[in-house]
Image (cartoon, rainbow, N blue to C red; front, side):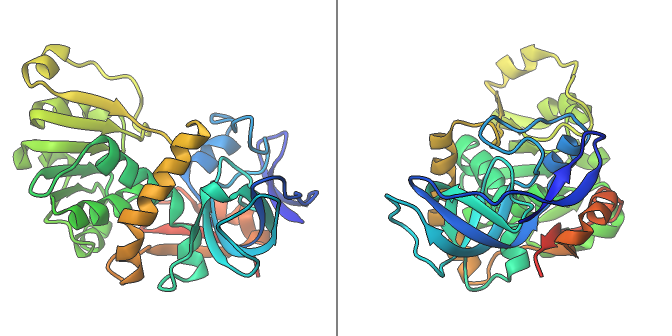
Amino acid sequence: MKAVTITENNEIAVKQREAPQVSVGEVLVKIHAAGMNNADVMQKMGGYPAPVDAPADIPGLEFAGEVVEIGPETERFSVGDRVMGLVSGGAQAEIIAVNERFLMSMPSSLSWEAAGSFPEAFITAHDALSTKGNLRPGERVLITGAAGAVGIAAVQIAKSIGAEVIASVRNPDTREATKKLGADGVITPADMENYGPYDVILELIGAADFAANIDALNYQGRIICIGFMSGADANVDISKLAFKQAAVYGRALRKRPKEGKATAIRAVEQEVLPFVEKGEMIVPLHATYSLDDAEEAYENYNKKGKFGQIVLVNE
């Protein structure tokens, strides 16, 4: 099979690799589309090595495709089923073997490209906001970096819960598109405190605004940290957390124990996919590239003005 491969020089190449074989509880999926994420770019740069259960040099955390073979002791899927999957790596290829616990049925409302870039962002956002942040109807939530993939998912999920959503977007070119997702307010990072206090803050950027996050937090508020692009070291007054009876959480999916990851997937199946099926949540796409053009896709991934996912497709 063809697969995106990270070379010894931290470059991207598409190479012929040995196709995987199904094992107990697994299905073999012919991949039609695979989303790209920050984790893939970081892995290419040598800063985010794959877990032991994933290929060390084939990136890709999410995909959509068709089941072409089922292994022993599988129960949920059959040959021909359209599925979406979340894995620890190896999705940017033509074929993948994956335990059925990490798959969801693909909604008919999504294209292959949209489905291929759905799992990572939407599972991450739902796990942070609903499962850990316990966001409730009527609460006010701030989503930083709301024009990124997880932010786009988070805005829509927060609205489906019934929260008041304030989206922080640095690039003015993407604010209107973010507003159309359902955000009640789209602001610049500098205006963040003026729109508080917030019951929940989803921090997708990193440490740069962390002290301001605490100042803008409501009594018994919650901060959930996911992204660290602006750095991971923050100098804060922790007494403010105590006085506000506030909580700070960190969430990540890739290296989570398998049962925890499967639980997060099942929660999205039950609480998010019904909205997707009805067309009430969308997966914006910025650009699609063929698998053979993966090197170009990686070169363009971090260019400014991106709104929505970059997806690799098998043609």
